[in-house]
Image 1 (cartoon, rainbow, N blue to C red):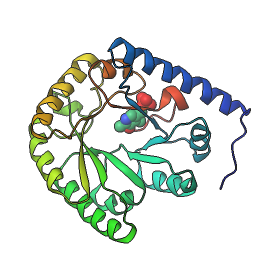
Image 2 (image 1 turned 45 degrees about the horizontal axis):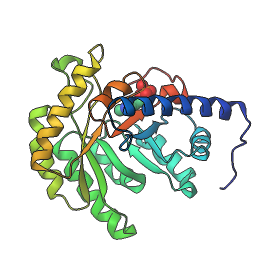
Image 3 (image 1 turned 45 degrees about the vertical axis):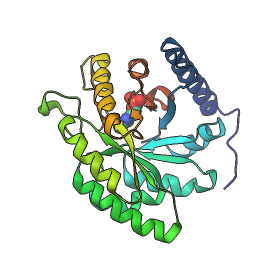
Image 4 (image 1 turned 30 degrees about the vertical axis):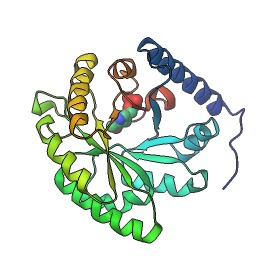
Length: 245
Ligand SMILES: *Cc1c(COP(=O)(O)O)cnc(C)c1O
């Protein structure tokens, strides 16, 4: 389990270059917003890419990885268990998958409905009894789309307070903050400004809910401008993947 990837393999060289380029973009964006001392956390979204790439990135110092399908995520987390990585679930989650997700995930960024909170709470009760694991960080995914037709998932902003109360009251779950994906074709600055506004009002009632999970390869600079605490970066580090959603 401890076989180290070859430092000189071509993929390793490519991943190192791309990772450094993204880290520089993040550092520049943080500096431009006066956030040198409080930069966002980088989550590398490894969906569709093999466990071997995760192992390479881990050897370059990445600790946080994101996945959006339970089957793929469970397999990678199990194979790489010895590395002690932090797994973030960022995709649409069916309630019935809660039981397996809580085996490996430290955080779920896509909590978007009451029924899922109930399922995660129940799954965490069983998991904590078995393993004593710490609580699950939960981000409420908010839809920033005005047009419900073009919707990329998430609860309506008006549903956030109720979900937050439910999460706050749930044993084993910690209300970490909000997550969003900028609507396709929209101005990311406008989208993330709206998200920051929703977060500011959430934090008035729930001061611990400081997380803002926003920003992908295309729009990380805008997300940092509007207070992102977690960035979810896939293709600019790992390269393209089949266009499926
Ligand atoms: C795939 C994915 C990402 C990463 O997107 P890139 O554009 O490849 O950086 C971020 N967030 C979510 C929810 C995703 O599904």
